[in-house]
Picture 1 (cartoon, helix red, strand yellow):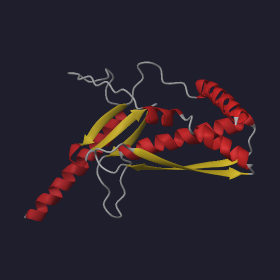
Picture 2: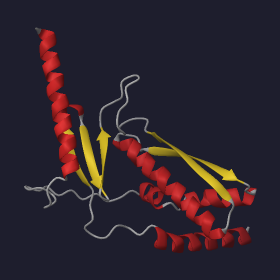
Picture 3: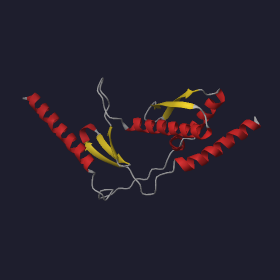
Picture 4: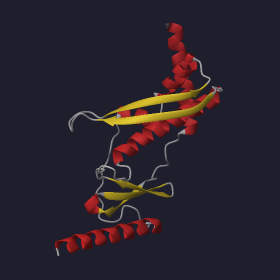
Length: 195
């Protein structure tokens, strides 16, 4: 039992050192920008690392496709971080891992209940049971998982001006124009139905 505890502690120390090199937190002041593009449908776009992605707050209707919602993005962040953590550790240790697949489900029984995530890990490759166990242990060290487990302080600041001095990026302006055009077309169609 004592040897197993020592091995786990050594594994933890090794992985914490690896994380320092792989998952450095963003530089102070870096931020993700989010712009509302359609208030009635609760649609926004986000800009991070020079890329733009749509996010939807609306529920999906049966068969209707929608952009990921914020809960799905948190689940995706947990899955992505877990996958990268396992992959980097396996590569560093020479573990013959061919593929990692993570499925994450977000659960909450009620608005007062604590959120929980179920993370299911699939490991493909010629792995021993010890290697599989080691890689699953590494999942517990994923930085996003640690942040979610510990909770985070959120500080909110009200600003009377644009939170970033740079203007809205042009690709986000194009998304906003398309959303406005769709909204106008929807309103026009609704008005025509009443005539």
